[in-house]
Length: 516
Image (cartoon, rainbow, N blue to C red; front, side, top):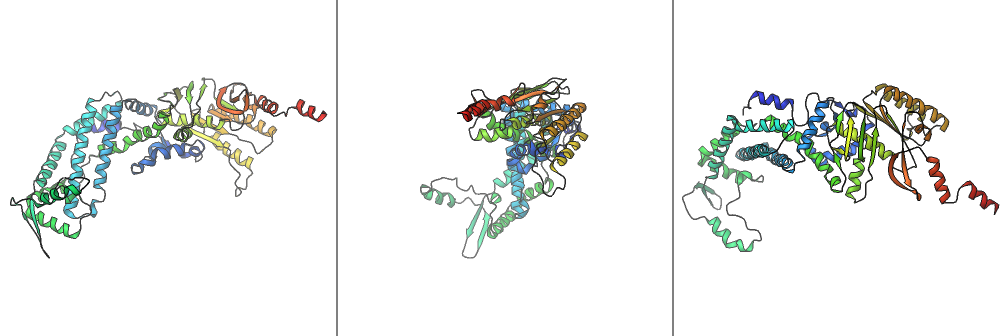
């Protein structure tokens, strides 16, 4: 089958659904990145039900062009219209049925293979026609879906599509008009053209229909569509083909001339539309739990914020269990680049850092992100340094290994990079950790990378120019974590004193008990 006008093809290929221009680079250049931020859990969850589509490369690749990101965001805005999303889903579902019909047909008998091929073609033509009609009536603003609508319309109106679909219809009509008689003897089966005799199939079916729970129409079994044909049925089909040679010649001709009836761009649209559908399906239960998603404003300046951000991987787990999810805000002005997060253990510090990294990663893919409203910048990469257990096979000490990893990060990071550090330097003394940590923060600030530094050392949060955020506890019950991370001065000693007071472990109370 020939394609449609070259001008339309160029437009679609340059602005296909998921990408435009440069495709970008793999985010997995840092092997720790996906695991530390739970990005691997998110992508595995998105792609789990879409194994046939090879979607992983689409979610692994960070675009280099801000135009690509905005291009995808426009499509997601259009897909907020349920009718538009339903049109894309319906086309996807029907194309999946077409591919299932085509899979494995080479193992079938010759006429059966040709029949399955014809049915798949008819399903495809109907799917494309309906898709074109639904796009035609859709209210579309995005460049991607408008280009898609124009392409599909011109394809459906093309002479090649019209002639091929009409040919398929004629072949099907010819086969459907076939009527034959079959006589089964003790060792012989005879097939001849129908002579207008009474249809015993219908008589027997009607006689026994009252004994059947589910009624079926008589004569609806189509051998061409039954994958379990045995050698007798195959032989009978060959006899029918000899009796109705003209109809079966037309079937063979259609198969030979239109083996690749699926237009390449339509096949590409089918696969790449899953980029949008799979993500929307993944976040659906989280949205149903009352959490918000937004399409962030994306720019190149560093005045960034996100309201009600949360860890998507964690939220997906908690929402499925009916457990609440705590959302937090973050903000950095253009002259700020480092957030130091302190507070009690198990208070949500690491979860906050993960949500910060996830927001920028998802935004860089052009996806809606967790949050009510956001403005972010387009990152070139995200680097993580999370605390890891010591490797007994590693001849270096843990501190040396941490510093080597940090050095590699600082050598690669740019002013468009994000660096997320979680509980580093726990293997050395507090004095040395403070000295080394200050040096690391100073180097990151000179690189002008954006950094979130989770630490148990309050001293880092008091450095000049650093934004201090603290994981808070319930003031009346300091042993209870609120999981709220807010801008405030570090107050680790205040938490310790409150807990000590609750359990009677302050200096005064201990001394008092000793004196008693």
